[in-house]
Image (cartoon, rainbow, N blue to C red; front, side):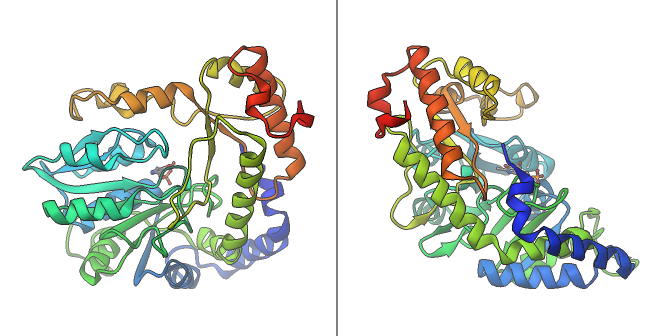
Length: 377
Ligand SMILES: Cc1ncc(COP(=O)(O)O)c(C=O)c1O
């Protein structure tokens, strides 16, 4: 889905030089690259504290601990996200409560969320899916009304804004992933927790390093979850370019929007800035066949996600018994198309042409109602 060499072309020399510098430094864990990265990423996101860790999954687990979530607490979240969101809730001993999504945005539906609150509810874990901010204003009002903590899974939304503030800064804590395909993708696993709360920051910092603030003195049981120097050094270079990379993703999405018509559904509100981690369309029919035929033509595309969380085998008996009709419908009809910095308009046209052709041949739609630009057919 992502052409990494194309994406990194403009910074490849700097990345290679940084890798050499770190290798020669002899310092690989908790050194100056990590300290500088944490400062720079906090400045970029507008967060008071930024604490790096080993993965986005760990960032979620550390955030839940930082918010004091533990055994028996119910955490409400979307039924349509990567498994790690719910896995993290289970890892801290809490109970995930899955909520259905809005068919237009793929993000959690605030009205359905409010109806799922019980006396055991402690927190809402909002996921900014595919780079589009969740309806954070409405989620915050619900949390305020019911005394719940708002947390954010920003794994897919690095740099996205909502109400003029970057995602991660709306809730008590925000968790990011630097998995290579993410908007700020590293060169292996990595993650980050942000917060404005000094106590939560202290807890997260201690937990990521074996529950310790001073070497060989341990205040509590923690984790070995540190970002390494090489990742931090390389991420610092990518961070310098993230605004440009996200702007490119928006331009590519704009081309897709221009060329496609009926099948696009994700539509940001005026006060939200999407960062298009994915560009996802909804096909009325024959999704799996269209996907297969696109791949046969050399066009990569993928289904995020084919199984909603209420249908995941691993979660049977661990999450609330629920019906999530919108999640289930979307999981059967969505298709994510390639999007990455460096992708050209010509490549977008090739993808759209092939997509529309397959949909037409399979009888899913009429091409004239799907394309603005008939010359592509
Ligand atoms: C929404 C979401 N949450 C959490 C994660 C977990 O991040 P990581 O793979 O860095 O552990 C991911 C990554 O795929 C994700 O997409």
